[in-house]
Image (cartoon, rainbow, N blue to C red; front, side, top):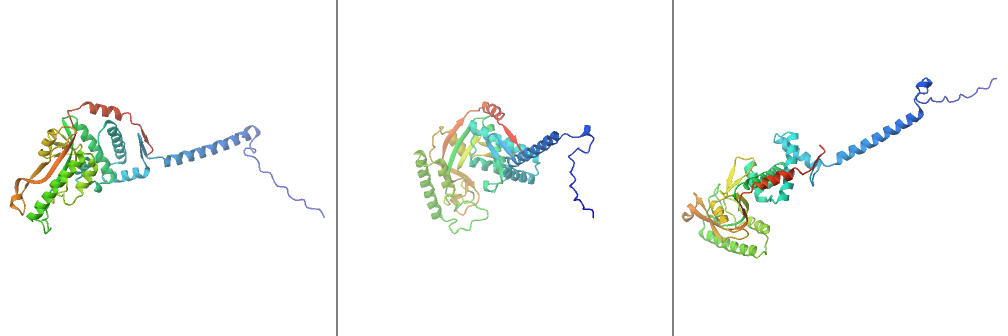
Length: 328
């Protein structure tokens, strides 16, 4: 009986070995091609991961993450602004903010509120979304540049109202003290005492302007009743106009504030003044009519300047130097 020999494994031909000898792919070329493909995929993966984790935008030294960017774009889209236009706006305003800081333009809370009122009808910045806040800051900078084209004033006004129990309110106040003369006189004495105290502390540098404003506007006794305390930092031209770029609304500071600013030297505090308004509705006849005293106030003149057309040129030249990296 013949012994059966085991079958031997058939060797697998190398790539290209089945081709005619002259057309076969050299082993070295196959090896090199394999390495090249591996390097390509590794490098491509690293590049993609880096790109995904890079900030969406880098404007100068300002970094905008992808989460921030996506949120801004989403808010802009709800305002019917195209993604590309919104991206350009983000870049432009961030560049403005950087340049403004370099040339000394201040973006303060009061100015942002003024811009927000004019552009969006929003009286409190807490109600602004990030897109609106960014655009309000841009408007503040545009406004500051416009003001430089005329003689202008930069002043911080500190108001101490005492009208909450006689000033008109809509709807009518239900406070039991409304119309109570004794309560009005008590508030009036308190307002004057506070005005004298804050002015003394500010002049002695024992209290910062920021801290003083925060305390004054949150003091419930220093409220108009019909409006919030409007203490804050103001920038206005020689006609009292607070103009907000991109808005048809031109706000005015009260003429009394304009005249006080004009009569106060830069760096000085004014004397305590009386603020007056017209009141058509009041339970107390002596507090009804034209030019009714409603508050005490004083100002700090931060700066007053003649028109400065060079500032716009400096701004335009500096903004061209800001580098931008887009990863969107």
